[in-house]
Image (tube, rainbow, N blue to C red):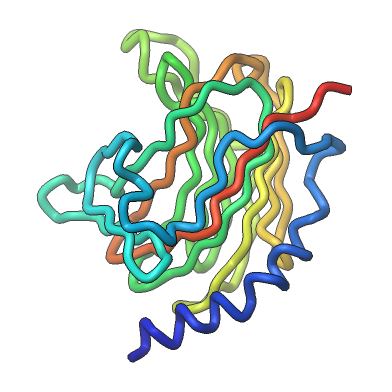
Amino acid sequence: MKHILSLLTGLLLAPLFARAVDELPLPVTRGAVLVSEDFSATNAIVKWRRGAGKWTVAEGVLTGTETPERKHPAGLACQRDYHDAVIQFRFQFAGGKEAILLLRNKFGNLCRVSITQSGMTVQKDRPNLPKDTPEKGVVFGKAPVQLKTGEWYAVTAVVCGEEFAVTLHDHATLKGRHPSIHVDKTEIEFLAGGVSILFDDLKAYKVAAK
């Protein structure tokens, strides 16, 4: 019953979120659509790359659940080729502890926003390849937040050139810059820490040329 009420609340609030995310954290313009997924179809993620954990689509919502045997946040990646992009989605804490949007390229992890119920962090990641790379991860910024279980929150991320900026709407905006971000990218990935994180209304666009 609680899950059904949560879904109904999400449907009622969706138009409000749509209006709230018109403002972008960087001065760019949305271009061609990379992905638009509301998870209304149960086979919505059949072609996505699955990582750790358990992922299900039901009642119009994507659910990620970390599994004890892996001891790693659940991971699910939508594979798209892009350089600069606007990425928007909604998420909800449904028992889980951390919601993550991770952008990846051919060398692995590139940059991410990590959100817990008490804080938000935006950073550039250390690449996965080569394994002996001297490149380090860089935290661009942290912000305290107060988020509740069972409520939907909207996120807008923009990666453009060397810049990565993320807004958790009505809560915080964090930005950073690093040369390693200015590369072609291959994946938009969700990570879910704990049991469970809900995701919905993923929309991603290439940044339109000026």
